[in-house]
Image (cartoon, rainbow, N blue to C red):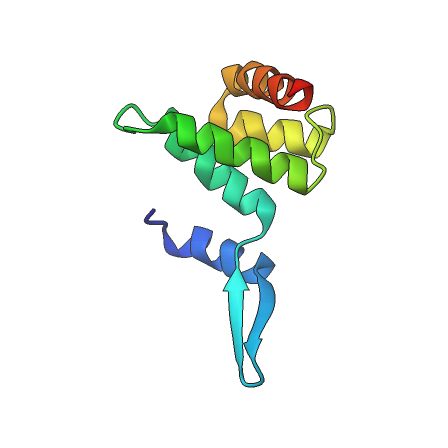
Length: 99
């Protein structure tokens, strides 16, 4: 995914460092940023495999204990995925939890 300079600076500022070797760190996007990017991809009309994006978002939310009832998460989902993304994610999260 290509992003503008402003977005890149936000991604970089919140990136988490993961040591690979004594002198090398890998910088990983914060989970919230990954969710935002995945939401944009999932709602893109040209996206071929949006189901994979939705699955990835659900996994990120579960692993990071994000809750759609949390205002910050809810606002993020609406901002990058639209109102309909809330119901899609509620359904997918409920299905995942019932497995």
